Length: 303
Image 1: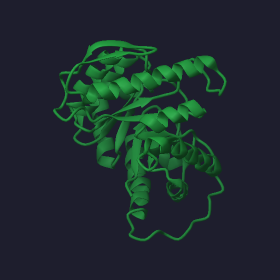
Image 2: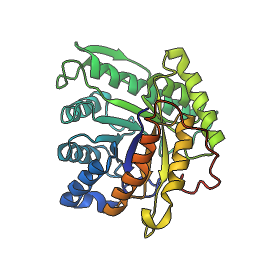
Image 3: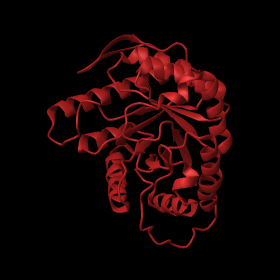
């Protein structure tokens, strides 16, 4: 089973922006990106408060500075027109084919409730936006579109690979509408921090939402974890065996991707890669499943 770990610079999972020190110095950023790659991280999250243009620049830096690490870029639908966004991401995809992924986070302005008409409209726009992006990344000829939120005349992205842009989508959400959209579009579903039972129930809900689209087993699940924060570096704050036990328990629920917060120190990055990531991956490369483990009592590293 493939287990992926994505590094989130900054350390705090519920903020809208990255810690500026990671990318403010280009030379340092390149050094840290290569450290992440050497440590075995699968990807890095680009989620700058400067918006799409800043994120695109940082994603370009990450793709050009590394050989294999994936780049997960946060992007809120509606910031720019679908054709503009599709062309920008397709151009980035050519810098690192199959290494670019698009993360569509919940709206900054709305809270998810089942009866919020504003939310329904926002999610409807997201659905149409993602449908258009995927069509623009794959179509061989210009097309016309007139929908509830977007009109496109001669929609086409000329600068893309012959087989189309291979850009995966990561979505999240809790409402029924959000899950339906994720079931239709998501390659990865971003789970909120929660208990084992909450995580299991949400995975089951998403798989049910994906069933009408024939995608029940095609969606991977991603979970945020907090490995350290502030002055409490990874090796000072958490016992590796505890982290391995917690992550392995979530893998057994169906989680295969982890977004790791709190590792900006080079030694912490290397230590986490060697003592946690490598161990978890080795556990699930075994031909036969390991014996069931008891649930850890403390979940303090899951944010």
